[in-house]
Length: 163
Image 1 (cartoon, rainbow, N blue to C red):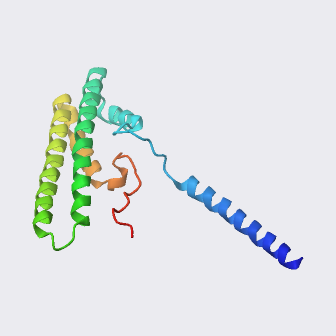
Image 2 (image 1 turned 180 degrees about the vertical axis):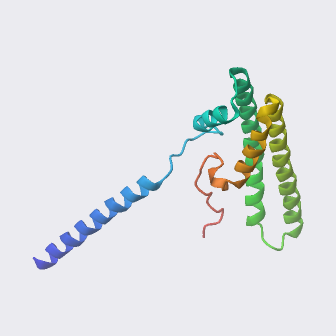
Image 3 (image 1 turned 45 degrees about the horizontal axis):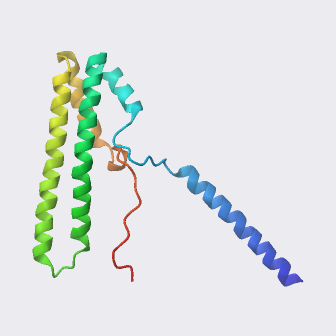
C-alpha cells in the first residue's frame, strides 16, 4: 500500500507543477492576433496627439499606413521565405545560395524604399510645424526592437527534414 500512496503523491505533485507551469506560461505570453497588419489603435491615438493631426490628416495617415502595411506584408513574407531557403541550403550549393542572397538583398532594398516612401507620405500630410515630429517618429521606430514593431508573432516553421 505504501508504493500506491507514494505514486499517488508523486502524480499529484506533478499535476500541480504542470498547472503552475501552464499558468505562468499563459500569463507571460503576448496575445496573438492572426491576420493583423500594423493595426495598433493605441499607436494611432498617440500619433494623432503628438502630431496634432486634424481629421483629414488622420484619415490620410491611416490610409497611408494601411497601404504601407499591405505592401510590407508581401515583401516581408517573400524575404522570410528567401531567408529560410538560404539558411536551409547545404554549403555545396553555392550557386543557389548566391542567387538567394541576391534575392534577399533586393527584397531588403524594397523594404527600405517602401519605408522611405511611407515616411515621405507622412511628411506630405503634415503642416510645417508638424514636420519635426516625423524625424522623431522615424528614430523611435528604428530604435525599437524588431519584435515591438507591430508585426504578427508566429511560431517558427518546422524544418523540412526532421530526422
